[in-house]
Image 1 (cartoon, rainbow, N blue to C red):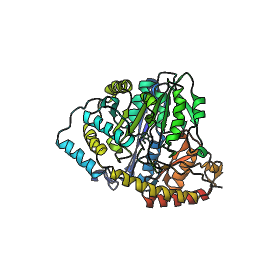
Image 2: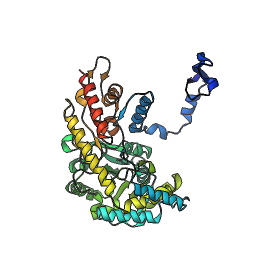
Image 3: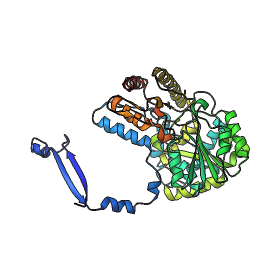
Image 4: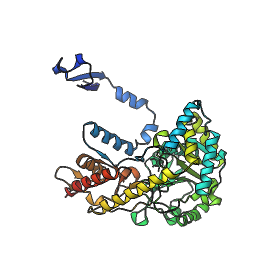
Length: 441
Ligand SMILES: Cc1ncc(COP(=O)(O)O)c(C=O)c1O
C-alpha cells in the first residue's frame, strides 16, 4: 500500500490506572496503533523552509539525548559529553534572583537588557579585562548562543566568507550556514596547540572575508591564546580592515595557565571586534540563559534590532541575578576553577595510561580533545570503529560513557570528553574506557 504509517507503540507502565494494569488484561501489555498518514512526511518535507536543510542539530545535544535514553533503560551511563559545569549556581546569585521575583521584576525588559545589567557588564570589562565599554556597546541575550546568532546574522550576507579555525564549537559553522555565509575552515594541529598561525590566517583571508570567529579558551581543544599570539594575529587583521572578529570568551574564567587575554585589548582593532561572553560557564548558570556582547554601537544596534523581532529582552530575573554575579565576589567561580584544575589532572593522568591516545593538555575550559585516530579500522570482533562517530558510539554502547565525536567540531581525528563531572565519575569512566579500548584489535 502506498501510504506512510505512524506507528505508536504503547508499553505497559506501572503508572497506568489500576483498570489498565496488565493483570486486568495482560494481553494488552503492548498496544500497537497504526495511523495511516498518506504522503504526510513527504508533504511536510516539501512545506518546511530551506533553512532547515542548511544546518544540522548540535551533536553535543544528540549525544546527551542518547545517554539519557540508555539511562532510562537502567544503564549506568557516565556523561562525559557534558558542556556545562556540574556545580550549582552560587547562593548569593540565587538570592538575588529570589529578591528580583519578590520585587516584581516580572515585566518585559528593554531589548538590549536593563541599564543596570549593561552597566554591570561594563564594570566587569573594566575590572577583568581593562576594557572601556559603555552601556550602548552592550546587548544582553538569551545565552551566548543567541549573541552569536545575532552577530552572525547582523554581519554576514549570502556568499560572504567566515574563517573559523578548527576545531571549533559546533554551533559556529551552523549559524554561518543559516546566514548563507561560506564557512572557511582553517585546520590547526595539536602540535601547534590547536592555534591558528598568522601565516594561516593571512592565507585564508580573501576579498570576500567578512568575519573571523574563534574562542579562547577554546571549546573543544582547551587552547588559550597568549597576548603575544593575539598580537601576531592582530598584525594580520590590521592589513585587512574589512574583517570583523568575533572573540568568544565564554570560558574566560576557566583558565589553567594564567591571565585571560582578549584580542579587544588592541585599541585600533576594537571597533571591529565583538566580544561574546555570558554567565553560563563561569557562574554555573547554563539554565538561566544569559549571554552578552560588547561591540561597536553600530553592531550593537544591529543585534538589538534582530533580537527585537526574535526574543525581545532576555529574562528579567536572570538579568537581575546577573548584576549580582558580575559585580560581587568571584570567589565561588574561582573555587569551581580550582576543582576543574584537579579534575583536569586526574583526567590527564588516566588518559596518559591508555595506549593509542594522543592528548593535548588543556589550558582552559573543561574538555580534553584527544586524537583517537589510531583506533580507526580496529574491531572488537563485532563492531568496527572507522571514524570518530563510531568511536563515540562504541564507547557509549560498551563502556557506557558518552563523549562527542570530533567531526562535530571540524576535526575527525579527535573526540571530546568533558571533565565537568565528579572526580569519582571521571575515574570510573576512564577505567571503563580503557577496558573497552583494550578489546579493539
Ligand atoms: C564556545 C562556546 N560558546 C558559546 C556557548 C553558548 O553558551 P550559552 O549557554 O551562554 O548559550 C557555548 C556553550 O557550550 C560554548 O561552548
